[in-house]
Amino acid sequence: MKPSKKSVDEIIADLPKHEQVVVKRLRALILECLPKASEKNNYGVPFYTRNRMICFIWPPSVYWGPKKSDYQEKGVSLGFCQGNLFANEDGALLAEGRKQVYCMYFNRVDEINEEQIRALLFEADLIDQQFRKPNRNRGRKSTPKTD
Picture: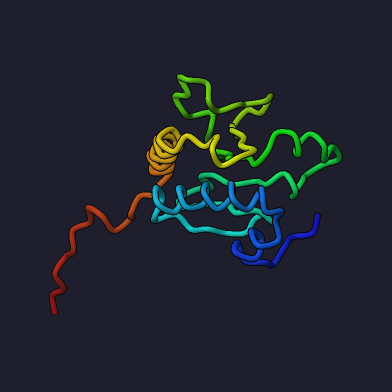
């Protein structure tokens, strides 16, 4: 798959209408809950990063690998890059044999439980903050110059 130079808005505009609706709602929730995250086009889909990659929205029409039909059936994926670090007590995030990235899927916008997604995004932000690089200047005392 060739890397896409499109903006996230262009990616969304090129999606089938039923995927656009779901992607737009998930995107709005992510931008609301992760205001300090950067939105980038990685692999032709929207990724959200701050200290590390936090999450992504992967529409099924942008497939990766040989089995396109598998992606079409599951729906739009909301993936969490550090999913293995989540509490995931309700089992909403699916590992599907992966060690780190966990996902959930939506075929329709009415399947999106906004309260649940917000809680997951806030947890993702807390996890991401653990990867913040320490400020090397913090805690240093400045020594006055003597002439």
